[in-house]
Image (cartoon, rainbow, N blue to C red; front, side, top):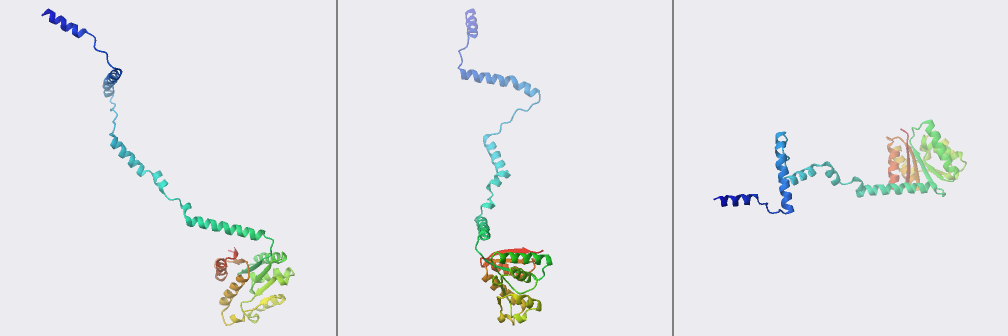
Length: 250
């Protein structure tokens, strides 16, 4: 009996077998968790919750779907639309063409049209413009109405180059006002349109303006936004691929 007890005591006091490094590290981690688990619970700190991997993936997907930045990246860039690119290129070509026309040394034909209700200051500006164009060798076309057209005639006559001024009347000369007849008396190149005598002045003026635009290369118009006849002429001139410059007085 004594021998059996000594054998058991010897077995308990024998050193245990050496552990592998991995087994020792696991045992150490388990010991640390056991050591700090109780103090954390005693301090009232809830243990960290590690959500399952599938649950974390679904939360991340929901966040991305509701993120405004993702939606913004998916929006189509409006500036990349083909129609906008076409408008940009067309506008640039028109601007470059106008610059080439202005810088060119060749003389051109200009049509000056505008409203009858023109202030004295505006008439002086139009007269100076017509005078400068004719003085530099350009040919000015206009009609025989008061206001803008009369100022263009006076400016061209001041340049003393009547061969560079052409006045196209919407009707016969006899249908014009006395002031207009006195003004165009000094003009050598006057074109009448007697075929429009039976028409109203508004319709005859539209036909006359259309003819003036066809005869010239560049239209310079002075108008108000409600000047229907003049504004319509500018639209038709653009459709004819003419250079158009519109000066709105309002």
